[in-house]
Image (tube, rainbow, N blue to C red):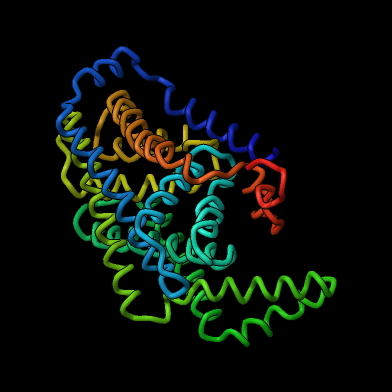
Length: 335
């Protein structure tokens, strides 16, 4: 509850900063000027991005179990619906939980694949950003923030590789913590840790690494294309490279644990990115509102489409997040 309240406060503050000094009549004029053909093209790309997400996740999962593409696409969409709907990042547990109901995959192993996905996303975005730095001047605060996230991501990836290839050394490193647990809990923690490390199996196969890397690059390049099409929809005369700058700023912004749906942080950081290129704040807010509406709208509509085939409850996610059996697994209790 404290995390929810803190997230709502952060969202409210960032939303206030986004709306302060805005000409709301100008925002409405911005909506009326949208070129719907370009906006429709951006929506098509957003749907394609969900397809690529699901294909990439299938590659990451493949050393554990080969999951059918329809199941992957279905679970991916419902999982991202949960991410934008539930507070405190609780929705992150939805995809791992749901895939365990579709295939013989352990929850902890499925959760490890989400870590891999996040690491590849971060590395790919900041690789694009590094290239961007040589093509356009950027503010020092953005370079410093990006450098921090790159170092953090590389550290996480390094520890994941250490866990995978030096499993015994990793277990020995964690042994003092394990010994502090009661015996029955220590045995369970040891089993879950082994299953978690098993989820990193893809990283030991160069062919799969290459596939995931290429799919990640394709995903974020077409994300930049979707942003650029929205530039055109709003008649913003910005270079294509500006789409990638905005993409990086947004990625940093939505990492802040704010309220559900990224309301506030999405808008604030979108405005921040566009004003770097001299776009008036009112026009930037019009863009931010529509970009947020379309992005979240695609996720919500696709998620609702597949929700009947993927039942879960927020209590299930709370349970798996705390290491307990989901309530839906107990006879006589609803999911």
